[in-house]
Length: 400
Image 1 (spheres, rainbow, N blue to C red):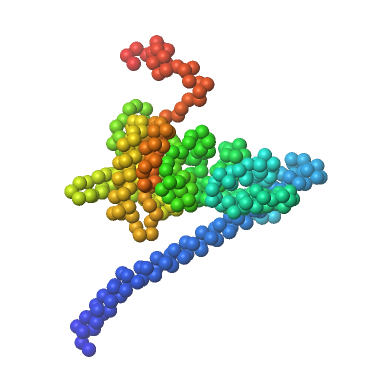
Image 2: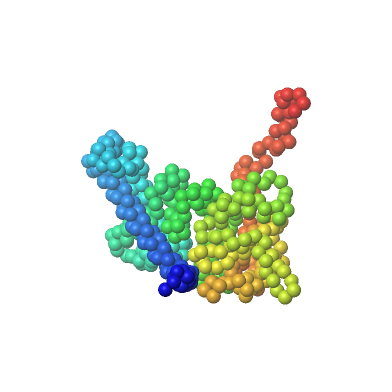
């Protein structure tokens, strides 16, 4: 065989390999990567569970010894010092950490906290511990009830990373609020940054004070309606945009895209950005959705329309039309029905309710806030910007 034929043969082999690598091999490698990622995630969760239960046991041991043997607080420092000596290569046994473990057990085994667990689990509607609710509700044997409740609490705590627990113990004091954030973190896989953002934005308080307005229960199967309700907030805190004056809708959209990371944190875990002014075509006409997202857990496209003024009934009809187009032209075969969210400066709940009654697609309406609202007791009692300038102007240097 001459050199020319050998060269051609090699070219043919290489070409054949390219065809294989470009199709079957890519799919094969993707499956391997997915399997490895799943295994690593499972291993990380198992490690986290063991670590949280270890910290729970350390905290419990110290509390019980102090209670029954009257050991003083100095035992915490002694334990920290001796554990560091015994395990010099292991981090997490400083005096501050041991104190936090003691607090971890003491506060999460406190009756005031345990009383909040069952009601919050019921409200979560399918949360990580929902399967325990029926047992707890009908448990007549108080000992069995307490054991099941304690086990349920430990299961919830073990599903949350230690760093999240530290932040919750420092920043959230109300038992019901802690249960809310623990359930959300465990159920949605919130990162620590997401958790801190939600605490700062008062997600729990807003869930109590504001009523969500949507038609999810009328347009989606029960399990999907619950997930969509969890994903929708009654109001969104957009202070991070730094807007202090009136803006147009396109300017609001531009600012949101500039601060997309913060906006996704405010939306909540699971939202993936698809695009802005997403183009839809019907016949000879074009239509544009302000912002389009995909929700990983609901497995549905989520369309956002931004309105700088109050809600108007015609907004619901326009969103219903957009969702029909999305479902017809862009929805994947295994996707759930597309969801629409109308973000507006303010809304009348009764008007929203009547506007959504006849709509066949799932639509939610929520308010956004560009600036913090003052507590009622402070309204009208703080000086205005003009009053402040009247005070400051006389002491400013000439010419300023």
